[in-house]
Length: 328
Ligand code: XIL
Image (cartoon, rainbow, N blue to C red; front, side, top):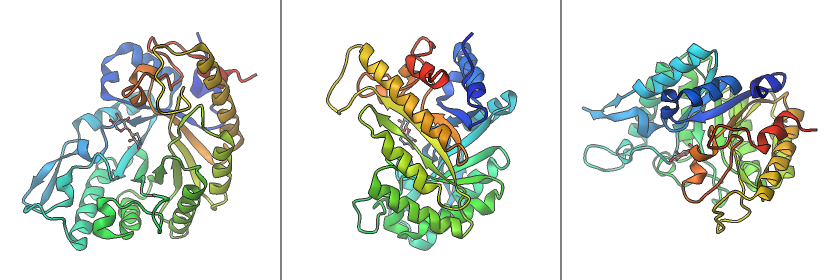
C-alpha cells in the first residue's frame, strides 16, 4: 500500500485531479482517485461548449447531466469540486456571441447573455462547486493593454472581466472566485495578472489566482516561486495550482517512442523542487490539482508521446510521485 497523496499533503493544501467522465465507469480509476485526491475538476464537462445545448427564442438552453455526475461523485466521496470554466475564448460555441442573423451581439446584448449564462450555471451549482475559474486565459502580454483580443474583448472591451466576476459573486456569494491562466510565472504576464487581480480584489470581486502550470523539464522553477511570492502580496489572496502537468521534453520537436529513464528521473527531481516551493507557500496555496489522472489520459500526450503526470498508464506510481511523497 503506497501512501495517499491527500494524507501526505493534508497539512499543506488539497490535492486535486482533472477527470474526463469516462473514469466514473472504471473501477481501477475510481480506486486511484478516491485514494489520493480530495478535489476534482471536470476536464471539459463544465466548459460552455459542454453545458450549452442551444438557444430558443433568445433564451439559452442547458444540459447539466454529465456535469452533475461530477457533483454526485464528490458528494459520495467527501471531496470538493472546482468549476472550470465560465468565460474563455476557447471551447465556447461561436453562436453564443451572435444573434439569430449571425451578427456579433452588441455590447449590451452580450452583457445580458453573460449574465444569463453565469446566473444559470453558477446558480445550478450553488453550494456544490467550491471554487470557480470565472475568467480563463484573458491575458496576452503581447497586447499593449495586456488583454487577449478574444471575441469577448472584441464585443465588450476589457469590461467583460469585471462583469463576469460581479455576476458570479451575485449568483453564489459563498463560492471562491478565481482568475486562471497559463505561464503565469512569465514576468510580463505575471505583472499584468498581478495588477488585474489586485484591482478586482480591492473591489471584493475575486478570491484567488489559478496558476495552471502546464510546464516541462525546461521550465525555470525559480520563476514559479517568484510569481507565487508576488501574487501572495495581494492581501487575502489564495493561490490554486489548477492544471499541473510536466512534459518530459525541453523543446517542441522531439518525440520519444518510450519514456527515457533519465527524463523520468529529471521529472521527479523537478517535481520535488516544485512541491518544496508549494509547501513553503502553503499559507497562500490551498489547492494543487494535476491536469489528468495518469499519463495515457493526459491532453499533452495527444499530439506526441509524453508522460507528464505522476501515475503511469497501468495506475502505477512513477518516480515523480515518490519525489512528492518522500522528497528525502
Ligand atoms: C484541455 C483538455 O485537457 C482537453 O481535453 C481539451 O481538448 C482542450 O482543453 N488550459 C485549460 C484547460 O484551461 O481547460 C485545457 O484543457 C488545457 C489548457
